[in-house]
Image (cartoon, rainbow, N blue to C red; front, side, top):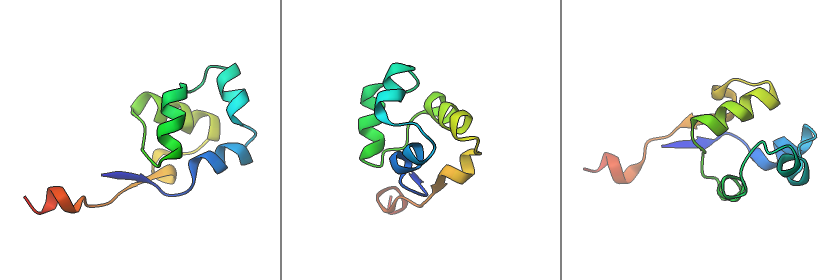
Amino acid sequence: MFIFKMNIIDLLKENGYNTGRIRREKLIGEKTMQDMKKGIVPGIKTLNTLCCILEMQPGNLIKYVEDKDIASQ
């Protein structure tokens, strides 16, 4: 499964993207923002948006870790 390498919400804030700005500019949906606060990695469209506004590559934001539930099957 994919996980964030860092706290993505804090990273957005550090780069001038607080939740008000994100809503106002309609960059990321409210449900997706709530999921990201819980550490859930978003879909490719939102990941693309994050990479664009943060000027980063996907590998800078997320990493793959083995999901123990899947590995035991």
